[in-house]
Length: 294
Image 1 (cartoon, rainbow, N blue to C red):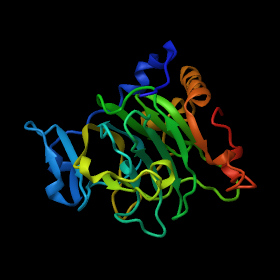
Image 2: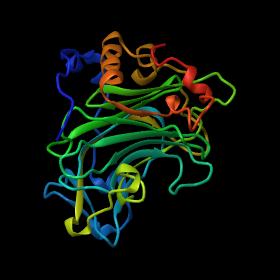
Image 3: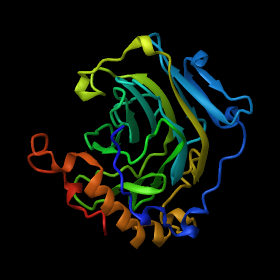
Image 4: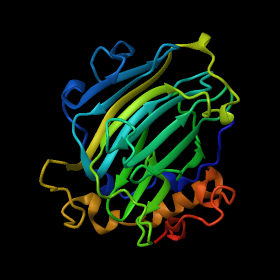
C-alpha cells in the first residue's frame, strides 16, 4: 500500500503523565457491552479479550456500551478488514441515542474500505442536535490491517481531539459563535460496528462491495475509558470542576509536542476538510474560524 513515510521522531514523544491517567475498563464484554444486532456475526477469542465483528451479504454487526458518558477519554484498539474491503465501513463512534435519531449528538471515527493496494481512509465527523456535515478525511501512515492500533477521543467542554495511536489528527474546539456547534450537553454511548456502505464509502460509491470476499472481519480489543458515567436524573457530569485529568488545563489545549504532531498531520495526511470546501459551504461554518492551536 502507498502509505506516507518519513514520520518525524516527535510522533512518539508525549507527556507520560497526560496519558497514564486513563485506565483500562475492567470486566468481561458482557459486563460492559451489549450486541446491537446480528449476534451470530459476533465472536470472541478463547480468552475473551478480542472481539470480532463480521459483515456478509446478509448483515453486519455492532455493539454498544451499557453505560452513557459525558466527557472523558475513550480509546479502542482496532484491526481493520484486510485485502479488498471496498464498500465496507468499520465504525467506532459515540452517540447520544441508540439509533440515528433526529436530535442526536455524535462523535465519529469511520474507516472507509478500499481496493487492495490502496491506502485506507479515516473519516471523522461531529453532529449536534442531528446536524452533521463536519467531515474530515485523513490517510494513515501505516497499514491498519496488519496490527491493532488505538483510536481515541478526548472530550471536554473546551475541545474534542481525535487521536490515532496518540497522535492528534483532528482538533475540534468549542466555539462561542452563534451556532455553538459543539456537542457538550448530551451523554453518549460508545458504539462499534461494521456495515455495507458501497453507495458512498469508496470513491464516492464507484467501487462496490465484492461479496465473494466476504465475510469481512474487523477486530477490537483493549477498550479504555476514563470518563464521567452519566446517571439519570441528576446531571452529575459537568466539565467545570477540573477534578479529572481530562478536564484540567493541560487537556484544554494541545501541548507543544502535540502541536508539532498535529502540524505534521495537517501537512501530510489531510485528504478532505469541510471547512475548505467552498462548494458545500460558500461561507464556512462559524466554528471553522476557531483556531485548533488556541
